[in-house]
Image (tube, rainbow, N blue to C red):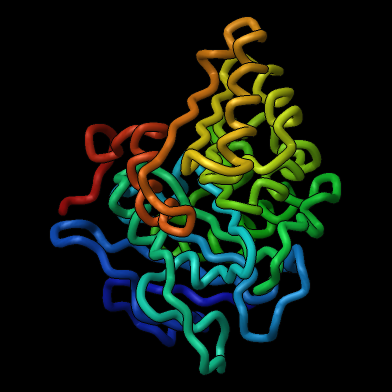
Length: 295
């Protein structure tokens, strides 16, 4: 399996075929962490050669090589995984001369100080569509995570911790974060991914364009599920959030499972501006408990 590891501390880049690249920027005093790009895990959509199918980020703010909380970020139209993960001017694939301004979500994940992994799949490659692709197939999401665990993640952590056993069962919670048209893939994973025992939270970043009844149904099925929906206060997402709130008020305990908030940020800026705070609120501050790295 081909993958590359992006280290923020100096390592032997030639060891076991890993390619060490420049790490994301972090604030002074924060641990740097590491990231992995997968190159040959089958993608959910057709992509261009040299583009990663997944990017996985460990923030380094906690020593656990297999964090218990996993966060899957689902991008919207015209997205590329590197453009979501990195800050600054980003090339979406190897050998591509054009660049785009990245969201920098790995940096925001580090700032959140949560004991979590951030996972960014490549969805539709630079297209104006939210189609879920293979994520609409039964069990596809589960098999993707299993491939990540059995391949690059186990190998990466095994160099230091060498855990006796890695499996999906060790994941305590999964949080889906969907931006814009990413809501379609979020619904596909909720309904077909085979991960419902793990998914406890859904976060929508100005993403509730439709599928309102389906999100309400998922939220109402189990009392420990939570949904946070941010919107810009106008248009389809504002209307659908009002509908969702009305639906959940009619569900026993539903009003406590749903949080709808208007954000002051623009549609495109929401992930960069809101992710760290949202993860801190949802998953807690890893710096306040557990086995932390010194910073």
